[in-house]
Length: 111
Length: 117
Image (cartoon, rainbow over all chains, first blue to last red; front, top):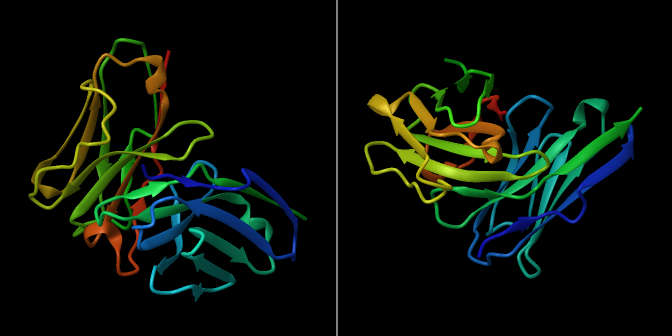
């Protein structure tokens, strides 16, 4: 079956450092991935996406890396700020209709 | 509206009662999704609506759960005879295109926190 999992449920980083959040997926047919950020009391917000024909995509302070060989996805946040503290989810899409989400990684930025 | 609106934001109900949760998607978004998020868990897919097509109900956990989408816009998720294990945050999302591919992603509402006592 499909599953999306995260290596680390929690991550603490010092303000200004770079953060790396990892995600493993099991369905080799997944061809589209999204990272979401969920702040307390809010719904998840789209951060960045990547298609399976790419291995890297950059946004503002964020970079997503995709390694299809080992079915691994990562989100890199540069110069982490207190406002980056949230739960981060990766989601995979293999059927075109819905996404499957992992448990999430809670990122805490230490001032 | 500017975003996906869900109501109520919080709902406390007694075990055995029925509840209705409402979702107003972004105007023009043809796809609407319901997810459930239990404490410390990921998002569990419940149901998906796309235009006038029959909904994908494959994620509904039991026949106590049902959802409808009237006029291709507002959606209501109904849970009958609520149980304590139904306690969770129920999230609604909408997207402009099927599967939210093409860089649109989903737009989520803030959710309804349901507590069954």
